[in-house]
Length: 249
Image 1 (tube, rainbow, N blue to C red):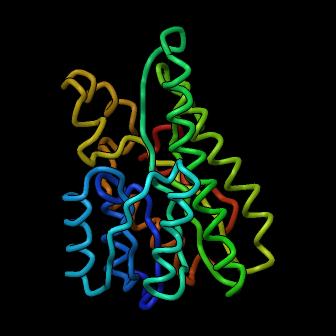
Image 2: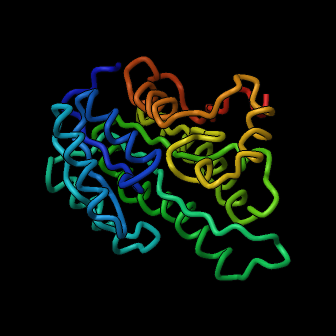
């Protein structure tokens, strides 16, 4: 585990799933964490407790990051609390799955707003703090769906593919300021979400396509986040790390 003691992170969508595990692992590495959530205050509070038990500090950061004023306020809350920000993990995301012919414009817009616009807004308002101190890490949580597509997820695939392009563009803009911007592209991660809702037949079908023969865990993703935020990843930027057990190898 990297030692990031004293650093400060904002993790969006951190009340559940992968985001909650990322927040906890950052806490274990000594990072003080702003735990962003929209509606699940009880779940977010449990994440704050977990980070605190790990020996770091944490604070609840309620905000819909797809709304500019709220994203800006979330960043300000973290900076006001600790006087700095070093790490941004853009994890907030939703799905509204439907075949394209049945997908409404609202389904399209809402997924793009949360999954892509939210990352843009948070990065926009965090970046001046990183550039000013000439150090920082941004990690965007994309998906293998943004690389290979998936039927019924045209909106999600577009958002996650856009996040990869966003990562590469911003990485080039800020590399000279010692700020790195990378993306993770998880595959099927068993954190109580989509994997849990699959039928046993569907689970076995997916497992048969994964060379490692298992679903990923939240810790598989969280440990990669901690690595990218550490000193050992200081010369890595603009990259997409696929965490899928070989699914799209």
